[in-house]
Length: 316
Image (cartoon, rainbow, N blue to C red; front, side):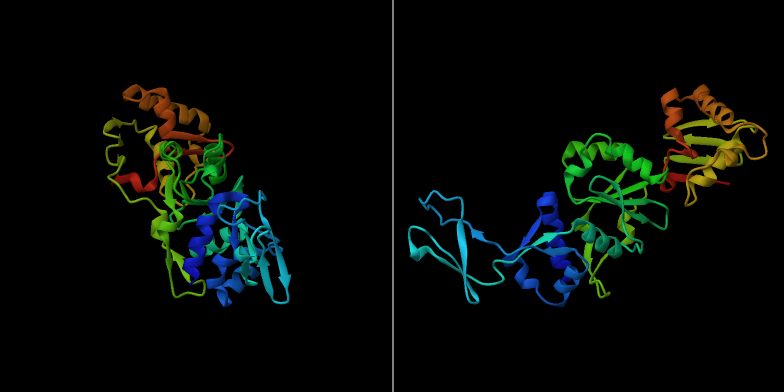
């Protein structure tokens, strides 16, 4: 029951601030589960409906017809033909607004995150980080992920971590932009499954991580060789330790190496070491843009490898 109503609310939430659950759709779910959603402000009951749609092919010219209450009964009256009056129940005139923040909190719990979601961008929440260090974001509206600058905002919020986004199906062009940015897109409804826990639903943590592919970056420590996307370079013994420090961070939870971590005991500034490392790759086979994509500067934090941990293989 919980899974069914959460699926319904998630689909309806694609409408944004206008997302509502009419009483006739809500009625089959009334009971303890529904009451818990009200308590968590996933649903917020609004004032009862005061008007109803007009009859099919009605010639009254009205945009809607008023609802009249008589005791415990409700009637939507047709001004032209009383035979077309509609008898309504109390449930029919109830209406509920969907609280996006409350729904985001429930989705976060289903995905295994204990902390409350944090707003990362307009109508986008950061749910938390996976055990592998991926930052997980949630959006109910496709429009929230199609605006200018949203990719930069999510990267800023992720602070150097790889990114997974739970969202509805996006328009092809928007989906392509997020894929090109290296984001892992997951459709909410595809991973929301029933469970016997207190919540009644669960999102498998494995779904939040992309399926491992053949390694994109291969490192042979014995020879100081780095292979990236089929191209290879052997780094000098002076600069390879700098790359190793970035590699160490790339394989850890916090994938960003601070300036002091990059510097180690060399006595040289991080920016000079990074420039020399990039130059080593450019001297072999990378363009300037490619070297900066492989060795990424994270503003105000340091540097990281531009390759997810799942795509790195290290030979001793």
